[in-house]
Length: 413
Image (tube, rainbow, N blue to C red):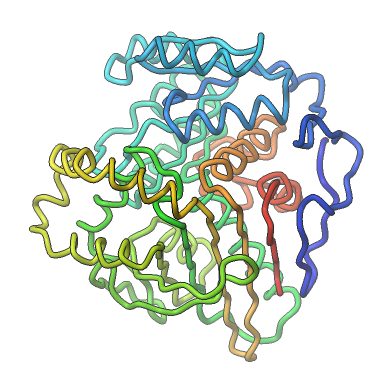
């Protein structure tokens, strides 16, 4: 099995470029190429939404990590698809896929080993159409869902996935996704090293500007402002106002202190349910500071607007030129911090910072895709923090791959 050598001991912090490298990895044009097992290296991976920013980033990362993989860009825009394929070399191809046409979707899945679903937004989506098709065609599945309701709807397909003998992961991007695995590793370390009870786990996220987000991700941000924030306090589920509860958080080297605000994110519920930590919440913030003011102002809009996908898409069209202009100045640095407090007074921290969110999300999701292909996910539908989703012994490799290009990665400090 290919993989990085990395230890998760107290106080370890490093730049990924300085990591020790095990057998199975070699440098290739600035990225560590992974030599996959023979039965995996020629796998065919379909990326739905592959012409978008997130899907295109995943395709690029997979191609650079594993040039032998055959990558299929799935979408409706043949022009954009052909352009994306031209960047992937002779192993790339385009497939016309209409998610509203079951036949088209199943035909595309019939000859692939893994489907990566990035065609959001997932908010207000009532059906798990791609997951249903994956189960029917017995195709491994991964999505980058960032919606609580959708993720638990996907989880309800667990028995059907087991019967079809397919592995599936929902919320397998960067946040949620890698942040969930970081939380699980902090919990595991606390249970093995500490004497106290787990008390509180907090997710903090920061992006400069929009983080290079495309219109779909911008829509997601606006739609989240129309949802009550679900958090947990001493085991009780509580509802809070979106973009409230501001905290000033230190994200460490290269980022510093940033203001973050409550949002309704799926990792809160899944990590609470799976790890048993009684108090869990998630906060997000941006910069320049007036972006946070803008988000606060949007919460004053009538809820029926923020909960209507068509109206939110019109808002996105209105704001998109301004977002692009500011992104050109602000950049797209990204950081996430996960804190775990125990009753013995110990606080364990994980920090993950990258200079470009648009690049990092592709690398992170590619790491999940490779882990599934390598057989580290059991049949069923799993959240990333579940040991059946990513085997405990495979987490170090996953995190090492996902953290490629980070300028600060700390675990269990």
